[in-house]
Image (cartoon, rainbow, N blue to C red; front, side):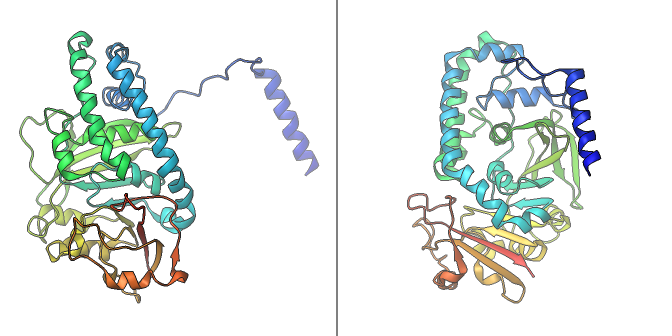
Length: 386
């Protein structure tokens, strides 16, 4: 043991003598070049719309405009507030409370998530694949950086609309459909892709590839170059983004599908239902889901979630508590259950309210997610299949 320790010290001294140490005030050498490819055209513009400085000449020129500087400063402040109030407490909570699900989750299924990659990534940072579903169309990233002089006058309007698209999420933790329909219109932000790009860059990720995805009749996916389609795509269709966390060499995938999940569109035997049936996902996450899974019109999606998930993490808008039979599921409750906000009628859960009355079954929730942003009286339910 002593010889081994001495050998290690001798080796360390030899390395220091050979390479030297940085002088006082001198920065250490930069890290080695990233080994995974970066789709520079997508990655740079995603930085730009995230308020993060870019390297391409055209975007560097636009970053000198007062409009971009004001946008970037405002985003930095909003992000710092989000970190302090929501993300830091959430990151401290998830590793302990969701340890088993996090260890097992390779694929995360997030229906009604829309472009909210951020919450999924922070709760389940180890997943290989994230599957987000929403009604909103994919759209595209802006094409700034080609002619700075001509584009400068459009920057303020675009960044203002993007700020408006993010405002509900920053303030309330979810997107409001009618507001998204306004701000994500084709003549404004143009779809969810800029919002997803924003969350990827703000979570220290780089974009390696962006592909279009269509669902074939047999439920299989057809992937092809993002720039190819010139026809109008109809639901269900989506995108696949390959990304990696900076400083790592692990390539991961994010899918977003524009789709309607009501039974009449998501019927058994339809292409997207076949696709969902063929998925192998360990965990389903649902928040701010408009209580749609409480209605019989969403029974097909409810069956897939119950049948395929090993773990379900949701607020009270997800699959109703009564569907998780105690013989098959263990449950942990967090926060506080109160009646749904006034926008939603007939979705009270008396059995869940009773379960929350037992203090031995309920743990504190140190962060806010969901519709009760005015009172911060949120409920989170964590189910584990036995």
